[in-house]
Image (spheres, rainbow, N blue to C red):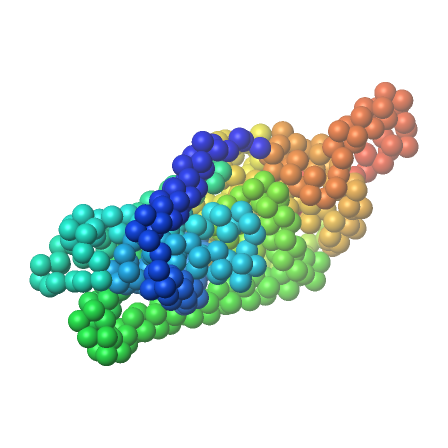
Length: 455
């Protein structure tokens, strides 16, 4: 696998660690009393609750991102208790929340910067602009300070996401470009949340009993996000059902998309794709054959070989799949993944694209697609033994299949490539007639020969 630029990860995680250490040092110098401890505990509880008010944005053009009320709660806490207590409360809440959600240690550490660094940056902006006043907001004099700190929080928050995307995997495959494309929308949403938090803080400081008046504003924002999320979830369920219906048209390929999706996700995890990449890979692999709705059943279920005209009809289905995904708000990259899922490493695929012009995820789906096709019964042949199918994948590395994606799949399936190569070499040298006969009757997975071998 292409080496990750780990030098980018060091400062990313170091920022959150440094923020925590500085906060501890500042509180130690100022002195920690019962009031500080009470603020710290209360702040951690509030931030934990803010993280729990989470709305998953499942649109594919957002890569499965999610929106919570963390920004609103964090900025409110910042104005009430100051940056150092807020940073420690954010760290405590972040760790507690991820432990509660049973997140992996790497995920727990990876989430810290996005939940701590924005609080610290916004706190510093507020301190500098407001002259260090904490727990006291004077309007209209502090309007500039409020806006400056809210903007600082939003910028720092999105910068953390972009940095994480750039450093999660090699830049050639990272989806940081998607983060950049979403930047204006995400900045606007986060800024609005911060201003809601500022409004609650102002009300609480002027008259704590008036706080319930502004709380419905925050609740309405959350409900609006949740409503949009429910609409998109219905759309996703419809797409999922659509994919199942396409599979059910042919009893030979029933649940084909489910299996291809499972194999693709296993390859993606082994290759260390980011969470956003895996989210997109799930849907592109699950929906890669939607375009078969445009192919007549007589072609899909033909027991013999396809003629040239029928083959051209079948070759259209990736493009139809891509157009369907684009109409459901999938981004252009994801649509191109589906469009290219029959491309080959050597450039002899349906579109004849050079491998550098094919999305990497398309090569992952191609491997999973070919394996499931070979190990499934079809009207024109019986299923291959899984071991023989894996050997075909091994033989196609560097020609039909992307070497890295193919090897990852072989490793995932427990196939010892080196041992298999040695065995085939020994078999060839020995001139094993039975082995040669076995290989001569096994259908090769070649989209230029018969599309249905990897359909």
